[in-house]
Length: 276
Image (cartoon, rainbow, N blue to C red):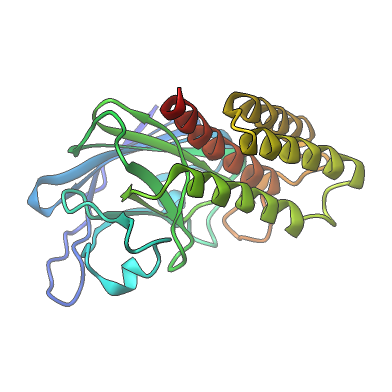
C-alpha cells in the first residue's frame, strides 16, 4: 500500500471558485481514495474503484474538487430540468476526475465512483442523486446506489468527467425513460462496432426490458437488464471495446453500456418500491 498526502492550495479569490484541499490520498491496488476539504466545513470522502487498471497514481488520476455557486446560470444550464433539479446549498461541489492526456492511466470495464459527505443526510425517499457530465457538458443521473446516515452515493462510468450531488425532483418515470434512451443511443452509435448477431441480442434484451417496464412490471424489466449486462460482460474485450485510457483514443463501449444499465436498474427498483 502506498500512501500519498497531497496538500493543494485553497484559492480564495472573488473571481475564481474555491478549490479543495485533497488530503490522505491513498492508492491500494485498484482503488484510489481521498478526502476533500473546502471552506465552510464542506468536505467529502471520495473513492474510485476499478475492475482492472494500469498506471494508477495520484498524478495520473487528476482528482480535484471545487465549490460552485448553486445559482450560477452557466451551471444550472447544464442540468436536465431547472425547475426540478437543483444543487444543494449544503454541498455545492463539483468533483473532477480528469487524467492528464499524456499520463499512463488506463482501465477496462467500469470505474465505480463513490462520495460520502457529512454535509448531507440520507432520508427515506431522498431526492439526492449522483450526476456526471463531460467537462462543461450536460449533467445526467448515474446513481447506482445510495446509503443511509450521512449521505453516501455511488455510480459507475466507462470514462471520467465531472461529478456532482444534486436534488432531483423529476418523476421517476421521466428519469427511467431518459435512461432507456441513453442506453439506446450508445447501441445506435456503435452499431458498426458490435457484431450484428450480438447487437441483435442486446437490442432484444433492451426491448424486452422496455416492454416489461411499460407493462408496469419493473422486476421483470430489471431481469432483462441484468441479462443485458451479463451479455456485455461476456463479450467485453472481444466483440465489444472495453478499454479507456488517458489519451482518449479509445471508446469504452462496454463500460458505457454497463454503466447505463446499472443506473437504470437503480431507478427501476426505486419505482418498484414506490409502487409496492
